[in-house]
Image (cartoon, rainbow, N blue to C red):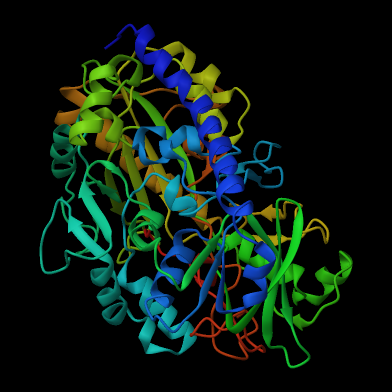
Length: 581
């Protein structure tokens, strides 16, 4: 159905990037006035701390909060960014946060073979990290993922039967499926999606297609569910909100924002004794009496270790860094390689069109009741996990159902996230005003692996990121994605709930016009044309058994061959979880 857009809602959306930049600048100014001017940074750094936590992102906030629960522990958290941007708490602001210099590291891959263009890899910068800028989708992963880690590390503590207890401890669950599989009163709030146009039709079609509607965080079998989000009262609930904000007055925890760590210092016994960092152009050193804990994420943790002389010797020498320890840092890079299927044009008003559905009432609904379209992560309403012929017992395709119509600015927003020039702007221009759905399909366990390397020995240079998508020799990654594409097309076009009642019809991609529509050859062209990231890179500091040539850390996340540096973030995952978030 075609709808005209409104100038009021368009004006609100246009204002968002400006406000993100404004609040980012204000945060820096406040930090300068109330921290730099009132506190002698030299005296802070001269004190020394028991634990220095590098990076206040999704993992670092948790680590700093848990360590400082012991009042005898003096903990310093160093974060390169500032406080979460105030607009990060508005879920609908998601596409504006990613790739904005106030909230993102602005990383890019090397040019991809499929397009010849680099692909942007959004990574959140600031307290909360990517949990302050992502789509908030909550998924634990499959039990087999964790059991696989236990086998790789030869450590049964990583088995799901044990890890599940920590998921429960973390949760304050108010989702769609209350049961013994979930707990309440943990620090991280989980809520059911509050604004989901078309959800009933989706779940009806899922049942028609032979799938089960189920709690994917409990049963973790093939099926679909309404999406669950890390939100509290309809607002984003990041790791900062859950773990740091409630304890900002804790006397044994010190947080230094806008502090970019440049090196981990190790003595002749390979013991970490402190870190160097730069804050507002001034260099500092701070001692760590017990441990340095690196929580920079898959990209930054690998970069920092290599800058500190820990990594592949041949590579470190090539950029002028003296190797201290030869470990496969930066190797084993894995990501949920993805593609956007759609739009599926609908003939009824059954999706979310921000320029039609966002109004000043939407703002008041969000502010006073935590409801309405501003609580939506750009129309994501459901998730599904489905099997492929190569993995019948371990669902291998993850699908995010996005009930968003085509509006003026949608193409530009997607182009901004991924750095695709005007590809989506031009593609979507023919359908502006139409109700629609999109499906973001991801390969859960890709065989393709990439790497991260240093560009040079400058800690402020961005690293080389080469994901090497679809590089597996057997071409199994592509075959699995084609099967996933076929499942989604069947769900939308061959069910009564979506295909008949809503008239869902897939639009052909212009770049693949020479292929017969809806054939395997067409799907492969569409997948290669629309190759994207699902923002889930892992593996560059992989854990494993001591002596394993692929391992950087042991099962307790200690850097192998050293004493007192530890890595705690997604970089330690030896294999990516099939559908964890």
